[in-house]
Amino acid sequence: MRNIVLTGFMGTGKSSVGVELAKELGFRYCDLDSLISDEAGMTINRIFEQYGETHFRDMESSAIERISSQENLVISSGGGAVIRGKNRELLRSSGVMVNLQASAEEIYSRVHGDSSRPLLKNNMSLEKIGMMLREREPFYAEADLRIDTTGKKVEDVVREILRYLEGNI
Ligand code: S3P
Image (cartoon, rainbow, N blue to C red; front, side, top):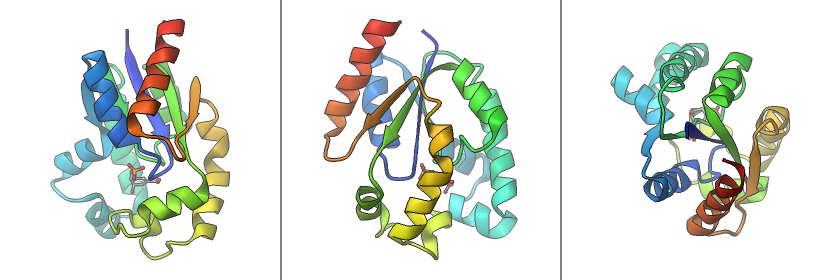
């Protein structure tokens, strides 16, 4: 099997689900944001502050290019990784794409106390989250499998993904 790519808005549970899913499958876990941050030697917030979003997106695209040629990885992608068409193409062709969803209200309640997300840092509101979700919806919708994580435990989501993989691989 190739890779499992988790996409989804900030706070939809990509990292928690990704770690558990990788364990279940015996795959390596790769968190794209951590990879970018480790390579840059600074936090994602700092990259945005110092170099701006476009530079971060270029780093993200470069990391996706490298990672998507590997195998047996569970890749947790940043919420905006699906914005660029080329990223989506690479991630899609790298394996199975699973999109994690949650309502704007649920996302707000999960991320509002967290200042590590530069795009929401100065504008953490339900309206902003709703607007970004609507903008990105067509990109998230390209996934092979979509799961609404609202009110679900990590293990429930992992089980749903495993069930899908059994029937489709
Ligand atoms: C972003 C999501 C973040 C991170 C960066 C930009 C986005 O990742 O890549 O802050 O554009 O939605 P998470 O989804 O892991 O929080």
